Structure formats: C-alpha cells, structure tokens
Image 1: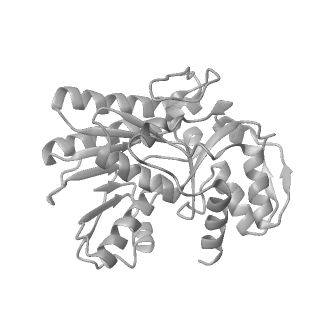
Image 2: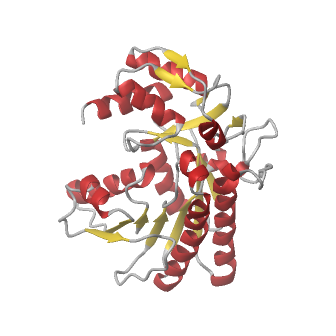
Image 3: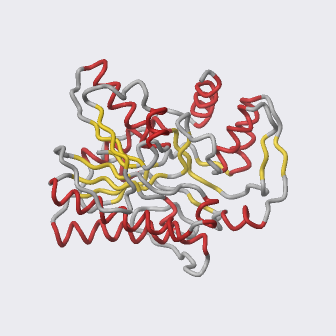
Length: 316
C-alpha cells in the first residue's frame, strides 16, 4: 500500500512497481491511496484498469480499514508545500501525526512492514557538520514554519513507539531535497519553481541570495533508496536519502538550471508570506553513509538529474 500516491516520490514508486508488473510479470499488487480521485485517475490512467492496480480515495488523517491483504505500507502522504505550512499549519500537523498513527494501526491489523517517508527537515539547525541519523538540532516551536519539521519528528517517534509497544516492523526514510519530473506543476519548493521557470522559457527567479547549502537527490535515485530501506533497513532505524555528490547552494542550483535552459538568474524580493514559508536552516547536508552500507548508490549527478527532468517535462 502506498499513501500520497500522486506525490513527487510515491508516484514514481508506483510507476516502478507497475513497470515491473507490465514488463517483468512481477505480479505485485499495488494499493494506491490519495485524497483526490480526479488527480489519481489522470496520473495513473494507463494503470487504472489493470487487475494489479487498486485505488483508494481516503484522507490519511481519518482511520481506515482495508480488506485487501497488505504486506508493506509506504507512507508518503504529507503536505510538502511551504506555502501550506503557513496558510494551514493545523492540517499540516494533523496529516503528519494522525496520518502515521492511522497507518501504524493498519499495519498492526495487517501484519505489514511500514516505511515512513519523513524529511531531512527533522534535523533542525546544523551544528556545522553534515547531518547523521543520530543528530537532533534546534527547531523553534514558536515559529509557524516549524509545524512541518516538528510534526515530522513527532511522527518518527510515534513509529518507534508502535515498534516498541506493538511490535510493528517500521523503518524511516529521511529524504533531502528531491527533484524530478514527477513534481506537481503547483509545487512551490525552490527547485520546482526554478524548473518550472525553465520549462516556460523564463528567467530563473530567486527570492533570496540563495547561500543556503542543501543536499539534493534525483527522484530515480530516491526511489531506489526507498526500496533499499524497505527491504534491507533495520526496524526502528532511520536512513538519510541523499547524494553526497549533489551538495550545492540554492544559488548554484538556480544557475545550473538556468544554464541547461539557456536562461539567466534574477533576484526578486520575497513577500512576507513567502518569507515565512522558507526554512531558516542555513546548512542542510545529509550524510548518506548509513544507507550506503546497505548497498545503495545513486546513479545521477545533479547535472544529469536536472537535464533529465527538463527533457522529460518538455516532452509531456
């Protein structure tokens, strides 16, 4: 079962599994869940009538029971929009905390293994070093923007609580900044906005000097990392998902996208609402050593990933 099935990461996971069904006779039954059936029908139209593809329209914040046997739950449903963190912080927190509780309860009934897709934002502010899984930096609970990372932290602890108290097998993925052709057109994260500028043959618009240092990972590499953690990760453990060779500032990212698209970068002043949605973390570099020890290795450089993303979206 895959929640948040039409999102950036999970829609690609559905594509991989259905590809294996269609071309390798993998016989993997997929239960895709999201809140918007119209969006799901559009995104998964080529699979809609396939006997191995099941769709459930449901809000993860509401308890659920499923009649179909479930072996694995990949829980990726979550608001990933900085603008929504500011405009709707209550639902942001409810989706993260109540959503994981409902999926863990379903896992208990189904005897399923859970992979929770968390976020690199759980680390908070850096101490100057790359983030390893045992690190926990400060997050100001009185900032409205903190509704997302703090509720993600709480959801991770809930996973561990269910493992300890109810013996649920659960692993946690902490993705860095993921990008790729499965992003939504209305995605308001910086990398997605830059790519959308490029696709519209516009200048790449930055709303700051872009000196924040970030880890990035192309969607195909992120998906293989998710499967690696699901199949080989140790229960009760978290794993960073990041490409150690794709660590650049936001400004460098904008300029690389501009170079591929043949555009230039311009800086505009952010509105007050936009500024509130930005993370205050100046360095968010995730150390991928732990997942690399499971045998995972990314294949796409950031240049290759950007080019692939723009090429695919240009031909849709």
